[in-house]
Amino acid sequence: MKEMILLEYNETKGLWNDNPIENHRPKDEPATYGWEPIAFTEEDKASVFTYMMDCKLHRREALKQPPYTTEYIRKEWKLFCYMYNSIIKSLEITPELKENVDKNFNDVDALARLGHGNFSDVKEDKELPWAWEYNPLDYKDANF
Image (cartoon, rainbow, N blue to C red; front, side, top):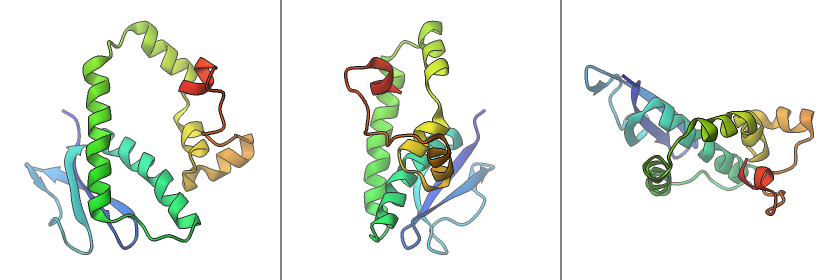
């Protein structure tokens, strides 16, 4: 069974907390110490979401803007869930598709190009362009 967590967010700091689920209950009391619940979910799914949102949060920090509100994060979570679930529902994951993604998708490079602060050294070391600087007419460049 997948690891389940209660994903929590601290609006003041713009930080995440993975509150593990033990015996069908969060390990730590929800909605305490500035942490607000976002979703009871799988740890892997939450990780994709928080990496994506950290790219946006790091951009806000660089612009000296406050972190997103909890309400905004919850809206983003539901939009992410729509996308995540729609992909699972509508795509037939063939061995060829899996191989294509395995061959062409590098999650660390993608996060670096998207501006995730924890991967800024990768962007600099590899001299990677920003994610939005791509050729929309090139399949690999536009999709990976």
